[in-house]
Amino acid sequence: MEAPLPMSRAEMDRLGWSELDVLLITGDAYVDHPAFGAALLGRWLAAHGYRVGIVAQPHWDSTEDLTGLGRPRLFAGVTAGSLDSMLAHYTAFRKKRSDDAYTPGGRAGARPNRATIVYTNLVRAAFPNLPVVIGGVEASLRRATHYDFWSGHLRRSILLDAKADLLVYGMAESALLEVANRLNGITTQETALYGIPGTAFVTTAGSFNVPEKGRLIGLPSHEQIEADPKKLMIATLRLEQQVHAAAWAVQSVGKRHVIFAPPSAPLTTEELDMLYALPFTRCAHPSYKEPIPAMEMIQFSVTTHRGCAGGCSFCSLALHQGRRIQSRSRYSILKEVKGFRRHADWKGSLSDIGGPSANMWGSRCESDPSNCKRSSCLYPAICRNFKPAQQSIIDLLTDIGELPGVRHVRVASGIRHDLALREPRYLEALVARFTGGQLKIAPEHICENVLRLMRKAAFETFLEFMTVFERESRRARKEQYLIPYLMSAFPGCTDDDMRGLALWLRSQGWRPQQVQCFIPTPGTVATAMYYAGIDPDGNPIHVARTDADRMRQHYILAPLTKEGTETAGPQRPAQEKRPESNRSGR
Image (cartoon, rainbow, N blue to C red; front, side, top):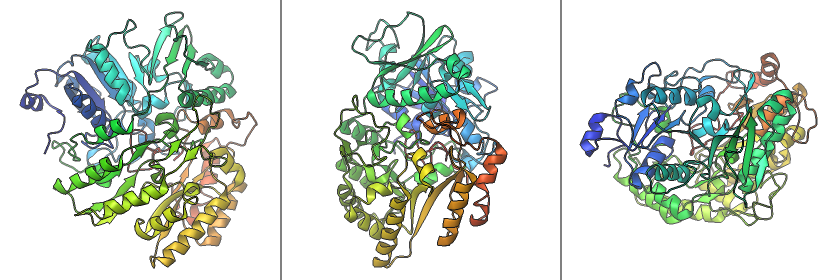
Protein backbone atom coordinates (compact mmCIF):
# COMPACT_ATOMS: atom_id res chain seq x y z
CA MET A 1 0.00 0.00 0.00
CA GLU A 2 1.18 3.53 -0.76
CA ALA A 3 2.62 5.36 2.26
CA PRO A 4 0.74 8.38 3.63
CA LEU A 5 2.27 11.83 3.38
CA PRO A 6 4.89 12.33 6.13
CA MET A 7 4.00 13.68 9.56
CA SER A 8 7.45 13.23 11.10
CA ARG A 9 11.13 13.64 10.30
CA ALA A 10 11.55 9.85 10.39
CA GLU A 11 8.96 9.46 7.63
CA MET A 12 10.74 12.14 5.60
CA ASP A 13 14.01 10.25 6.02
CA ARG A 14 12.41 7.04 4.72
CA LEU A 15 11.39 8.97 1.62
CA GLY A 16 14.88 10.41 1.25
CA TRP A 17 13.69 13.98 1.81
CA SER A 18 16.03 16.44 3.53
CA GLU A 19 13.38 19.17 3.49
CA LEU A 20 9.78 19.85 2.51
CA ASP A 21 8.57 22.15 -0.22
CA VAL A 22 5.17 22.71 1.38
CA LEU A 23 3.92 22.20 4.92
CA LEU A 24 0.15 21.84 5.43
CA ILE A 25 -1.27 22.52 8.90
CA THR A 26 -4.82 21.29 9.57
CA GLY A 27 -7.29 21.25 12.44
CA ASP A 28 -8.44 17.74 11.48
CA ALA A 29 -6.65 14.49 12.16
CA TYR A 30 -4.78 13.30 9.07
CA VAL A 31 -6.84 10.73 7.21
CA ASP A 32 -5.43 9.90 3.79
CA HIS A 33 -8.82 9.98 2.10
CA PRO A 34 -10.13 12.29 -0.65
CA ALA A 35 -12.90 13.56 1.62
CA PHE A 36 -10.30 15.27 3.84
CA GLY A 37 -9.00 18.56 2.47
CA ALA A 38 -5.38 18.37 3.64
CA ALA A 39 -4.99 14.88 2.18
CA LEU A 40 -6.62 15.89 -1.11
CA LEU A 41 -4.44 18.98 -1.57
CA GLY A 42 -1.30 17.28 -0.28
CA ARG A 43 -1.66 14.42 -2.74
CA TRP A 44 -2.42 16.89 -5.57
CA LEU A 45 0.74 18.89 -4.92
CA ALA A 46 2.78 15.70 -4.50
CA ALA A 47 1.50 14.47 -7.87
CA HIS A 48 2.95 17.63 -9.40
CA GLY A 49 6.40 17.00 -7.95
CA TYR A 50 6.29 18.83 -4.62
CA ARG A 51 7.42 17.34 -1.31
CA VAL A 52 4.51 17.83 1.09
CA GLY A 53 4.30 17.18 4.82
CA ILE A 54 1.33 17.46 7.17
CA VAL A 55 1.02 18.69 10.75
CA ALA A 56 -2.39 17.68 12.04
CA GLN A 57 -4.01 19.25 15.12
CA PRO A 58 -0.78 20.80 16.49
CA HIS A 59 -0.54 22.00 20.07
CA TRP A 60 -1.03 25.75 19.98
CA ASP A 61 1.06 26.66 23.02
CA SER A 62 4.32 25.71 21.32
CA THR A 63 5.90 25.66 17.85
CA GLU A 64 7.48 22.26 18.45
CA ASP A 65 4.96 20.31 16.34
CA LEU A 66 5.69 22.56 13.35
CA THR A 67 9.47 22.77 13.65
CA GLY A 68 9.78 19.00 13.93
CA LEU A 69 9.50 18.70 10.13
CA GLY A 70 11.79 21.63 9.45
CA ARG A 71 11.22 24.88 7.59
CA PRO A 72 9.50 24.25 4.23
CA ARG A 73 11.24 25.64 1.17
CA LEU A 74 8.22 27.40 -0.40
CA PHE A 75 5.27 28.07 1.92
CA ALA A 76 2.96 26.83 4.66
CA GLY A 77 -0.74 26.20 4.04
CA VAL A 78 -3.14 26.60 6.96
CA THR A 79 -6.68 25.32 7.36
CA ALA A 80 -8.96 24.98 10.39
CA GLY A 81 -10.12 21.68 8.89
CA SER A 82 -13.37 20.43 7.46
CA LEU A 83 -15.46 22.78 9.61
CA ASP A 84 -15.32 26.32 10.87
CA SER A 85 -13.58 25.86 14.22
CA MET A 86 -16.27 27.80 16.11
CA LEU A 87 -18.98 25.62 14.61
CA ALA A 88 -16.95 22.54 15.49
CA HIS A 89 -16.86 23.64 19.13
CA TYR A 90 -20.28 25.16 19.86
CA THR A 91 -23.93 24.24 19.35
CA ALA A 92 -26.71 26.52 18.15
CA PHE A 93 -27.14 27.66 21.77
CA ARG A 94 -23.40 28.34 22.23
CA LYS A 95 -22.88 25.30 24.42
CA LYS A 96 -19.64 23.41 24.03
CA ARG A 97 -19.88 20.28 21.95
CA SER A 98 -18.76 17.10 23.66
CA ASP A 99 -17.22 15.43 20.61
CA ASP A 100 -15.42 16.03 17.32
CA ALA A 101 -15.76 13.45 14.56
CA TYR A 102 -12.48 14.55 12.96
CA THR A 103 -10.34 13.78 16.04
CA PRO A 104 -9.00 10.41 17.25
CA GLY A 105 -11.42 8.96 19.76
CA GLY A 106 -13.98 11.60 18.79
CA ARG A 107 -12.69 13.90 21.53
CA ALA A 108 -13.52 17.60 21.52
CA GLY A 109 -10.94 20.32 22.02
CA ALA A 110 -8.13 19.14 19.75
CA ARG A 111 -8.20 22.38 17.74
CA PRO A 112 -8.36 25.95 19.07
CA ASN A 113 -11.12 28.48 18.60
CA ARG A 114 -10.47 30.53 15.44
CA ALA A 115 -7.95 27.91 14.41
CA THR A 116 -6.92 29.61 11.16
CA ILE A 117 -5.68 32.68 13.03
CA VAL A 118 -3.99 30.67 15.78
CA TYR A 119 -2.20 28.32 13.38
CA THR A 120 -1.02 31.22 11.20
CA ASN A 121 0.49 32.88 14.27
CA LEU A 122 2.24 29.59 15.07
CA VAL A 123 3.76 29.47 11.59
CA ARG A 124 4.96 33.07 11.91
CA ALA A 125 6.64 32.25 15.22
CA ALA A 126 8.18 29.02 13.95
CA PHE A 127 9.29 30.23 10.51
CA PRO A 128 9.71 34.02 10.27
CA ASN A 129 9.13 35.49 6.79
CA LEU A 130 7.80 32.23 5.37
CA PRO A 131 4.81 32.84 3.03
CA VAL A 132 1.56 31.65 4.65
CA VAL A 133 -1.54 30.74 2.63
CA ILE A 134 -4.84 30.18 4.44
CA GLY A 135 -7.81 28.24 3.07
CA GLY A 136 -10.51 25.71 3.83
CA VAL A 137 -14.05 26.32 5.01
CA GLU A 138 -13.21 28.74 7.81
CA ALA A 139 -11.07 31.03 5.67
CA SER A 140 -13.24 30.71 2.58
CA LEU A 141 -16.49 31.77 4.23
CA ARG A 142 -14.86 34.47 6.34
CA ARG A 143 -13.02 36.05 3.42
CA ALA A 144 -15.02 39.30 3.56
CA THR A 145 -16.64 41.24 6.39
CA HIS A 146 -18.93 38.76 8.15
CA TYR A 147 -21.17 38.40 11.18
CA ASP A 148 -19.70 36.17 13.88
CA PHE A 149 -22.51 34.51 15.82
CA TRP A 150 -20.26 33.34 18.65
CA SER A 151 -19.06 36.82 19.57
CA GLY A 152 -22.20 38.63 18.41
CA HIS A 153 -20.17 41.12 16.36
CA LEU A 154 -19.03 41.88 12.84
CA ARG A 155 -15.53 40.76 12.00
CA ARG A 156 -13.40 41.97 9.12
CA SER A 157 -11.86 39.61 6.57
CA ILE A 158 -9.98 36.79 8.26
CA LEU A 159 -7.10 37.55 5.90
CA LEU A 160 -6.48 40.75 7.88
CA ASP A 161 -6.86 39.17 11.31
CA ALA A 162 -4.65 36.20 10.46
CA LYS A 163 -2.08 38.45 8.73
CA ALA A 164 -1.55 35.78 6.09
CA ASP A 165 -0.01 36.49 2.71
CA LEU A 166 -2.87 35.01 0.70
CA LEU A 167 -6.32 33.49 1.17
CA VAL A 168 -7.54 30.70 -1.10
CA TYR A 169 -11.32 30.42 -1.29
CA GLY A 170 -13.36 27.59 -2.71
CA MET A 171 -11.87 24.34 -3.97
CA ALA A 172 -8.16 25.01 -3.83
CA GLU A 173 -6.32 22.61 -6.16
CA SER A 174 -5.67 25.00 -9.04
CA ALA A 175 -4.94 28.03 -6.87
CA LEU A 176 -2.57 26.20 -4.52
CA LEU A 177 -0.66 24.63 -7.39
CA GLU A 178 -0.23 28.08 -8.97
CA VAL A 179 1.04 29.41 -5.62
CA ALA A 180 3.63 26.63 -5.49
CA ASN A 181 4.63 27.18 -9.12
CA ARG A 182 5.08 30.92 -8.64
CA LEU A 183 7.12 30.57 -5.48
CA ASN A 184 9.17 27.85 -7.16
CA GLY A 185 9.92 30.10 -10.12
CA ILE A 186 8.05 27.90 -12.62
CA THR A 187 5.50 30.66 -13.22
CA THR A 188 6.80 34.21 -12.96
CA GLN A 189 4.64 37.23 -12.18
CA GLU A 190 5.62 40.81 -11.37
CA THR A 191 3.00 40.91 -8.59
CA ALA A 192 4.18 37.74 -6.82
CA LEU A 193 1.07 35.97 -5.49
CA TYR A 194 -1.45 38.65 -6.47
CA GLY A 195 -4.23 37.92 -8.92
CA ILE A 196 -4.34 34.13 -8.81
CA PRO A 197 -7.91 32.96 -9.56
CA GLY A 198 -9.67 31.74 -6.43
CA THR A 199 -7.69 33.90 -4.02
CA ALA A 200 -7.98 37.09 -1.97
CA PHE A 201 -5.16 39.42 -1.04
CA VAL A 202 -4.67 42.78 0.68
CA THR A 203 -3.40 45.98 -0.94
CA THR A 204 -3.14 49.64 -0.07
CA ALA A 205 -4.81 52.27 -2.27
CA GLY A 206 -3.49 52.24 -5.82
CA SER A 207 -1.13 49.30 -5.38
CA PHE A 208 -3.06 46.85 -7.57
CA ASN A 209 -4.99 47.34 -10.79
CA VAL A 210 -7.73 44.98 -11.89
CA PRO A 211 -7.08 43.77 -15.46
CA GLU A 212 -8.78 45.99 -18.04
CA LYS A 213 -11.16 43.29 -19.25
CA GLY A 214 -12.04 42.20 -15.72
CA ARG A 215 -15.46 43.03 -14.33
CA LEU A 216 -15.21 44.60 -10.86
CA ILE A 217 -17.90 44.32 -8.17
CA GLY A 218 -17.60 46.74 -5.28
CA LEU A 219 -18.69 45.57 -1.82
CA PRO A 220 -19.72 48.02 0.91
CA SER A 221 -16.72 48.77 3.10
CA HIS A 222 -16.28 47.21 6.52
CA GLU A 223 -16.98 50.59 8.12
CA GLN A 224 -20.15 51.11 6.08
CA ILE A 225 -21.48 47.73 7.22
CA GLU A 226 -20.65 48.56 10.82
CA ALA A 227 -22.66 51.78 10.49
CA ASP A 228 -25.60 50.17 8.67
CA PRO A 229 -26.33 46.44 9.21
CA LYS A 230 -28.45 46.35 6.04
CA LYS A 231 -25.29 46.76 3.99
CA LEU A 232 -24.19 43.27 5.06
CA MET A 233 -27.02 41.96 2.89
CA ILE A 234 -25.76 44.00 -0.07
CA ALA A 235 -22.20 42.74 0.45
CA THR A 236 -23.31 39.11 0.78
CA LEU A 237 -25.47 39.16 -2.36
CA ARG A 238 -22.70 40.83 -4.35
CA LEU A 239 -20.14 38.28 -3.21
CA GLU A 240 -22.57 35.53 -4.21
CA GLN A 241 -22.86 37.19 -7.62
CA GLN A 242 -19.08 37.53 -7.91
CA VAL A 243 -18.58 33.79 -7.47
CA HIS A 244 -21.16 32.83 -10.10
CA ALA A 245 -20.24 35.52 -12.64
CA ALA A 246 -16.47 34.96 -12.28
CA ALA A 247 -15.82 38.64 -11.60
CA TRP A 248 -13.34 40.58 -9.47
CA ALA A 249 -14.51 42.15 -6.21
CA VAL A 250 -13.05 44.63 -3.74
CA GLN A 251 -13.86 45.63 -0.16
CA SER A 252 -12.25 48.52 1.69
CA VAL A 253 -11.19 48.17 5.33
CA GLY A 254 -9.75 51.42 6.58
CA LYS A 255 -6.96 52.44 4.21
CA ARG A 256 -6.53 48.94 2.83
CA HIS A 257 -8.44 46.92 0.27
CA VAL A 258 -9.21 43.21 0.21
CA ILE A 259 -9.17 42.17 -3.45
CA PHE A 260 -11.04 39.04 -4.48
CA ALA A 261 -9.80 37.57 -7.74
CA PRO A 262 -12.38 35.68 -9.84
CA PRO A 263 -12.94 32.10 -8.67
CA SER A 264 -10.78 29.33 -10.03
CA ALA A 265 -12.13 27.68 -13.13
CA PRO A 266 -13.87 24.43 -12.15
CA LEU A 267 -11.75 21.35 -12.63
CA THR A 268 -12.51 19.55 -15.85
CA THR A 269 -13.72 15.97 -15.83
CA GLU A 270 -10.22 14.86 -16.82
CA GLU A 271 -8.67 16.83 -13.94
CA LEU A 272 -11.18 15.44 -11.43
CA ASP A 273 -10.45 11.93 -12.67
CA MET A 274 -6.74 12.52 -12.16
CA LEU A 275 -7.34 13.90 -8.67
CA TYR A 276 -9.38 10.93 -7.47
CA ALA A 277 -6.99 8.44 -9.04
CA LEU A 278 -4.20 9.56 -6.68
CA PRO A 279 -2.91 6.85 -4.31
CA PHE A 280 -4.96 7.54 -1.19
CA THR A 281 -4.64 4.84 1.45
CA ARG A 282 -8.20 5.59 2.69
CA CYS A 283 -6.88 5.06 6.23
CA ALA A 284 -5.99 7.24 9.18
CA HIS A 285 -2.30 7.92 9.63
CA PRO A 286 -0.73 4.88 11.36
CA SER A 287 0.46 7.02 14.30
CA TYR A 288 -3.12 7.22 15.62
CA LYS A 289 -4.08 4.66 18.25
CA GLU A 290 -7.81 5.47 18.39
CA PRO A 291 -10.39 5.40 15.59
CA ILE A 292 -11.48 8.62 13.90
CA PRO A 293 -15.30 8.61 13.65
CA ALA A 294 -15.45 10.62 10.42
CA MET A 295 -13.15 8.18 8.65
CA GLU A 296 -15.13 5.15 9.77
CA MET A 297 -18.33 6.69 8.40
CA ILE A 298 -17.01 7.47 4.92
CA GLN A 299 -14.05 5.16 4.34
CA PHE A 300 -15.79 3.41 1.45
CA SER A 301 -17.85 6.22 0.01
CA VAL A 302 -17.33 7.71 -3.43
CA THR A 303 -17.54 11.37 -4.40
CA THR A 304 -18.99 11.58 -7.91
CA HIS A 305 -19.14 15.35 -8.35
CA ARG A 306 -18.74 18.81 -6.87
CA GLY A 307 -20.98 21.84 -6.68
CA CYS A 308 -24.66 22.32 -5.95
CA ALA A 309 -27.19 24.06 -8.15
CA GLY A 310 -29.58 24.61 -5.26
CA GLY A 311 -28.29 27.92 -3.89
CA CYS A 312 -30.18 27.58 -0.59
CA SER A 313 -29.82 30.81 1.38
CA PHE A 314 -28.42 29.04 4.47
CA CYS A 315 -25.95 26.81 2.64
CA SER A 316 -22.26 27.44 2.14
CA LEU A 317 -21.87 25.10 -0.82
CA ALA A 318 -22.50 27.55 -3.65
CA LEU A 319 -20.07 30.06 -2.11
CA HIS A 320 -17.41 27.37 -1.73
CA GLN A 321 -17.85 24.80 -4.49
CA GLY A 322 -19.93 26.86 -6.90
CA ARG A 323 -23.30 26.23 -8.55
CA ARG A 324 -21.84 24.62 -11.65
CA ILE A 325 -21.73 20.83 -11.32
CA GLN A 326 -18.30 19.30 -11.95
CA SER A 327 -18.59 15.57 -12.55
CA ARG A 328 -16.13 12.73 -12.69
CA SER A 329 -16.32 10.28 -15.56
CA ARG A 330 -18.15 6.98 -15.25
CA TYR A 331 -14.84 5.19 -15.92
CA SER A 332 -13.10 7.00 -13.04
CA ILE A 333 -15.83 6.17 -10.54
CA LEU A 334 -15.95 2.50 -11.52
CA LYS A 335 -12.16 2.28 -11.34
CA GLU A 336 -12.16 3.71 -7.81
CA VAL A 337 -14.72 1.14 -6.64
CA LYS A 338 -12.80 -1.70 -8.28
CA GLY A 339 -9.75 -0.58 -6.31
CA PHE A 340 -11.56 -1.17 -3.02
CA ARG A 341 -11.10 -4.90 -3.49
CA ARG A 342 -7.39 -4.47 -2.74
CA HIS A 343 -8.06 -2.73 0.57
CA ALA A 344 -7.69 -4.77 3.75
CA ASP A 345 -10.80 -3.23 5.33
CA TRP A 346 -13.14 -3.75 2.36
CA LYS A 347 -16.25 -5.80 3.21
CA GLY A 348 -18.27 -5.17 0.05
CA SER A 349 -20.54 -2.33 1.23
CA LEU A 350 -20.44 1.12 -0.36
CA SER A 351 -21.79 3.54 2.23
CA ASP A 352 -22.50 6.31 -0.26
CA ILE A 353 -22.23 7.16 -3.94
CA GLY A 354 -22.87 10.84 -4.46
CA GLY A 355 -21.89 14.35 -3.51
CA PRO A 356 -23.47 17.51 -2.12
CA SER A 357 -26.76 16.33 -3.67
CA ALA A 358 -26.56 12.78 -4.95
CA ASN A 359 -28.83 13.28 -7.96
CA MET A 360 -26.78 16.07 -9.57
CA TRP A 361 -23.96 13.96 -11.02
CA GLY A 362 -23.70 14.61 -14.75
CA SER A 363 -25.91 17.71 -14.64
CA ARG A 364 -24.92 20.66 -16.77
CA CYS A 365 -25.96 24.28 -17.21
CA GLU A 366 -26.40 25.73 -20.68
CA SER A 367 -26.62 29.37 -19.62
CA ASP A 368 -23.83 31.95 -19.70
CA PRO A 369 -22.91 32.52 -16.03
CA SER A 370 -21.79 36.09 -16.72
CA ASN A 371 -25.36 36.94 -17.80
CA CYS A 372 -27.26 34.76 -15.31
CA LYS A 373 -29.04 36.72 -12.57
CA ARG A 374 -30.49 33.74 -10.73
CA SER A 375 -29.42 32.95 -7.18
CA SER A 376 -30.46 29.30 -7.61
CA CYS A 377 -30.81 26.96 -10.57
CA LEU A 378 -33.71 25.19 -8.84
CA TYR A 379 -35.64 27.97 -7.10
CA PRO A 380 -38.32 29.32 -7.55
CA ALA A 381 -38.54 26.72 -10.32
CA ILE A 382 -36.01 24.52 -12.05
CA CYS A 383 -34.26 26.59 -14.70
CA ARG A 384 -34.85 25.48 -18.30
CA ASN A 385 -31.08 25.77 -18.88
CA PHE A 386 -30.29 23.29 -16.11
CA LYS A 387 -30.04 19.79 -17.58
CA PRO A 388 -29.96 16.90 -15.07
CA ALA A 389 -28.84 13.38 -15.99
CA GLN A 390 -30.65 11.24 -13.44
CA GLN A 391 -31.18 8.21 -15.66
CA SER A 392 -27.42 8.08 -16.17
CA ILE A 393 -27.02 8.03 -12.37
CA ILE A 394 -29.17 4.91 -12.13
CA ASP A 395 -27.17 3.29 -14.93
CA LEU A 396 -23.97 4.10 -13.00
CA LEU A 397 -25.31 2.74 -9.71
CA THR A 398 -26.47 -0.42 -11.48
CA ASP A 399 -23.05 -0.96 -13.04
CA ILE A 400 -21.36 -0.44 -9.66
CA GLY A 401 -23.68 -2.95 -8.02
CA GLU A 402 -22.71 -5.58 -10.61
CA LEU A 403 -18.97 -5.28 -9.96
CA PRO A 404 -17.34 -8.36 -8.38
CA GLY A 405 -17.06 -8.01 -4.62
CA VAL A 406 -19.74 -5.31 -4.28
CA ARG A 407 -22.55 -6.48 -2.02
CA HIS A 408 -24.40 -3.26 -1.21
CA VAL A 409 -24.65 0.13 -2.92
CA ARG A 410 -26.29 2.96 -1.03
CA VAL A 411 -27.07 6.61 -1.66
CA ALA A 412 -26.67 8.41 1.66
CA SER A 413 -25.74 11.93 0.53
CA GLY A 414 -29.31 13.13 0.41
CA ILE A 415 -31.06 14.19 -2.76
CA ARG A 416 -32.96 17.16 -4.12
CA HIS A 417 -36.53 15.89 -4.05
CA ASP A 418 -37.82 18.56 -6.45
CA LEU A 419 -35.27 17.42 -9.02
CA ALA A 420 -35.95 13.72 -8.43
CA LEU A 421 -39.64 14.20 -9.23
CA ARG A 422 -38.66 15.29 -12.74
CA GLU A 423 -37.42 11.78 -13.56
CA PRO A 424 -39.85 9.06 -12.36
CA ARG A 425 -37.54 6.23 -13.47
CA TYR A 426 -34.72 7.59 -11.36
CA LEU A 427 -36.94 7.89 -8.31
CA GLU A 428 -38.40 4.40 -8.76
CA ALA A 429 -34.96 2.80 -9.04
CA LEU A 430 -33.54 4.83 -6.17
CA VAL A 431 -36.30 3.76 -3.79
CA ALA A 432 -36.42 0.13 -4.88
CA ARG A 433 -32.71 -0.65 -5.21
CA PHE A 434 -30.41 1.94 -3.65
CA THR A 435 -32.11 3.10 -0.46
CA GLY A 436 -30.98 1.18 2.60
CA GLY A 437 -34.16 1.58 4.64
CA GLN A 438 -33.77 5.33 5.12
CA LEU A 439 -33.49 8.23 2.71
CA LYS A 440 -32.31 11.69 3.75
CA ILE A 441 -34.32 14.58 2.43
CA ALA A 442 -34.48 18.24 3.37
CA PRO A 443 -37.93 19.84 3.27
CA GLU A 444 -36.70 22.12 6.13
CA HIS A 445 -40.18 23.53 6.87
CA ILE A 446 -43.79 23.57 5.70
CA CYS A 447 -44.60 27.31 5.73
CA GLU A 448 -44.32 29.00 2.35
CA ASN A 449 -42.97 32.28 3.71
CA VAL A 450 -40.11 30.44 5.43
CA LEU A 451 -39.41 28.22 2.41
CA ARG A 452 -39.26 31.30 0.18
CA LEU A 453 -36.59 32.85 2.39
CA MET A 454 -34.68 29.56 2.38
CA ARG A 455 -34.94 29.32 -1.44
CA LYS A 456 -36.51 25.90 -1.04
CA ALA A 457 -39.18 24.15 -3.09
CA ALA A 458 -42.85 24.55 -2.15
CA PHE A 459 -44.17 22.20 0.54
CA GLU A 460 -46.53 20.61 -1.98
CA THR A 461 -43.45 19.31 -3.78
CA PHE A 462 -42.33 17.48 -0.65
CA LEU A 463 -45.83 16.03 -0.17
CA GLU A 464 -45.76 14.73 -3.74
CA PHE A 465 -42.33 13.20 -3.17
CA MET A 466 -43.47 11.58 0.07
CA THR A 467 -46.42 9.98 -1.75
CA VAL A 468 -44.19 8.58 -4.49
CA PHE A 469 -41.61 7.33 -1.99
CA GLU A 470 -44.23 5.44 0.03
CA ARG A 471 -45.82 4.00 -3.11
CA GLU A 472 -42.53 2.78 -4.56
CA SER A 473 -41.41 1.33 -1.22
CA ARG A 474 -44.64 -0.69 -1.03
CA ARG A 475 -44.21 -1.80 -4.61
CA ALA A 476 -40.68 -3.00 -3.80
CA ARG A 477 -42.01 -4.68 -0.62
CA LYS A 478 -39.52 -2.77 1.51
CA GLU A 479 -40.12 -1.07 4.84
CA GLN A 480 -38.42 2.27 4.35
CA TYR A 481 -38.53 5.70 5.94
CA LEU A 482 -37.81 9.26 4.97
CA ILE A 483 -35.40 11.10 7.28
CA PRO A 484 -36.42 14.75 6.96
CA TYR A 485 -34.12 17.60 7.92
CA LEU A 486 -36.08 20.35 9.65
CA MET A 487 -34.98 23.74 10.91
CA SER A 488 -36.21 26.03 13.67
CA ALA A 489 -35.64 29.75 14.29
CA PHE A 490 -34.76 30.51 10.68
CA PRO A 491 -34.86 34.26 9.90
CA GLY A 492 -38.45 35.13 9.03
CA CYS A 493 -39.84 32.13 10.95
CA THR A 494 -42.30 32.94 13.75
CA ASP A 495 -43.55 30.92 16.71
CA ASP A 496 -46.80 30.39 14.79
CA ASP A 497 -44.84 28.96 11.86
CA MET A 498 -43.20 26.47 14.21
CA ARG A 499 -46.55 25.54 15.74
CA GLY A 500 -47.86 24.89 12.24
CA LEU A 501 -44.92 22.60 11.57
CA ALA A 502 -45.46 20.79 14.88
CA LEU A 503 -49.15 20.24 14.11
CA TRP A 504 -48.36 18.80 10.70
CA LEU A 505 -45.72 16.44 12.13
CA ARG A 506 -48.17 15.30 14.78
CA SER A 507 -50.79 14.62 12.10
CA GLN A 508 -48.29 12.34 10.35
CA GLY A 509 -47.25 10.58 13.54
CA TRP A 510 -43.65 11.67 12.96
CA ARG A 511 -41.05 12.13 15.71
CA PRO A 512 -38.22 13.81 13.79
CA GLN A 513 -34.65 13.15 14.86
CA GLN A 514 -33.08 15.82 12.63
CA VAL A 515 -34.31 19.17 13.94
CA GLN A 516 -31.62 21.83 13.95
CA CYS A 517 -31.90 25.32 15.32
CA PHE A 518 -30.57 27.74 12.71
CA ILE A 519 -26.92 28.69 13.24
CA PRO A 520 -25.86 31.95 11.57
CA THR A 521 -22.58 30.83 10.05
CA PRO A 522 -20.33 33.31 8.24
CA GLY A 523 -20.89 34.33 4.66
CA THR A 524 -24.40 33.11 3.89
CA VAL A 525 -27.44 35.12 2.82
CA ALA A 526 -29.42 33.68 5.74
CA THR A 527 -26.86 35.03 8.19
CA ALA A 528 -27.17 38.46 6.61
CA MET A 529 -30.94 38.16 7.12
CA TYR A 530 -30.38 37.27 10.76
CA TYR A 531 -27.99 40.16 11.40
CA ALA A 532 -29.81 42.86 9.41
CA GLY A 533 -33.40 41.77 10.09
CA ILE A 534 -34.36 42.02 6.40
CA ASP A 535 -34.97 39.69 3.48
CA PRO A 536 -32.79 39.91 0.34
CA ASP A 537 -35.15 42.55 -1.09
CA GLY A 538 -34.66 44.75 1.96
CA ASN A 539 -38.05 44.11 3.56
CA PRO A 540 -38.16 43.79 7.38
CA ILE A 541 -38.63 40.25 8.73
CA HIS A 542 -39.11 38.73 12.16
CA VAL A 543 -35.88 37.29 13.59
CA ALA A 544 -35.64 35.06 16.66
CA ARG A 545 -32.36 36.61 17.74
CA THR A 546 -31.98 36.00 21.47
CA ASP A 547 -31.21 32.54 22.82
CA ALA A 548 -34.53 32.63 24.66
CA ASP A 549 -36.44 33.30 21.42
CA ARG A 550 -34.49 30.65 19.56
CA MET A 551 -34.96 28.04 22.28
CA ARG A 552 -38.67 28.73 22.44
CA GLN A 553 -39.04 28.09 18.71
CA HIS A 554 -36.83 25.02 18.81
CA TYR A 555 -38.60 23.41 21.74
CA ILE A 556 -42.01 23.83 20.17
CA LEU A 557 -40.98 20.62 18.40
CA ALA A 558 -39.32 19.08 21.47
CA PRO A 559 -42.26 16.84 22.47
CA LEU A 560 -42.10 15.30 19.00
CA THR A 561 -38.37 14.60 18.89
CA LYS A 562 -36.77 11.45 20.19
CA GLU A 563 -35.21 13.09 23.22
CA GLY A 564 -36.42 16.67 23.01
CA THR A 565 -32.89 17.99 22.60
CA GLU A 566 -30.94 19.69 19.89
CA THR A 567 -29.46 17.43 17.25
CA ALA A 568 -26.45 19.44 16.27
CA GLY A 569 -24.64 18.89 13.02
CA PRO A 570 -22.02 21.00 11.31
CA GLN A 571 -22.27 22.75 7.95
CA ARG A 572 -22.73 21.02 4.66
CA PRO A 573 -19.47 19.94 2.97
CA ALA A 574 -17.13 22.38 1.83
CA GLN A 575 -14.08 20.57 0.79
CA GLU A 576 -15.83 17.33 -0.07
CA LYS A 577 -18.69 15.11 0.97
CA ARG A 578 -18.68 14.91 4.75
CA PRO A 579 -19.98 12.39 7.27
CA GLU A 580 -22.22 15.04 8.83
CA SER A 581 -24.55 17.55 7.28
CA ASN A 582 -22.30 20.44 6.46
CA ARG A 583 -24.42 23.40 5.60
CA SER A 584 -24.71 26.72 7.28
CA GLY A 585 -27.65 26.71 9.61
CA ARG A 586 -27.44 22.98 10.15
